[in-house]
Image (spheres, rainbow, N blue to C red):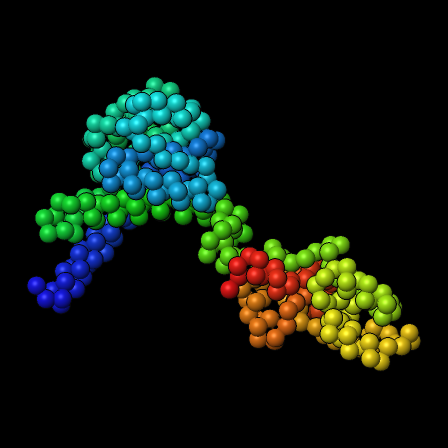
Length: 325
């Protein structure tokens, strides 16, 4: 078989799934809305369950819920027979995935949920299946054509189940007004966490900021520079940013040192500032572009004002510490 045939077969499988997945729209009805309400109103944990490939889908959806701040875990129905059922409490919600809805391993979990009046969202393709009959909310998957050569291997059916689970999760996110800020809390590490870090997350604030009143002299400037160890001084006048002095500026002034010389005489006016909600990666790009090691941070509303109040300082070391690239 030529490589061209490989590509045509892959496209055929993809096109089958793409066409069949459009049937997802049949599921978006009052039952879907009721399922969302149950998830939003859950006072406990959203527990996903399933056997085989449906179980794999359940694990993924549970992971998605957890990543957006909805307490969730996956419970294997087979393992639940040996004690794991004790993890499920009355205030919890069960979402059970099973394309046929008649998987024998689900029987005891369903009986347990019904006995203790634990709410169940059942996701299956057969309306008369054991699972859907026992569910409080029934989400009926449409019959779809599998994408393999036999038309029997779970391909499209698993894809549409996954799609439904993701649609439940994203709808809940909209209703809970989930944001990048909240997402960052649950993803502090990895590439996602790094890409969501903002200037205000890594800036030096409060007493750690190297600030100096514009009336201070050279000796006092040198003292603060040594204490704060950021290599800069932010000169403040009437509570606003007046200018910037670097350690290089101080070293150069030593040659012409005079007790009468004021800090404002050799400070840099209009230093580079960024808003507190700028991404850390963009702040690094600005530093590289301007060949500087520090940036002053102000509030979003102050950025376009003439007089700016200092909120923090980003130093290149902070960016390197968090692995920003």
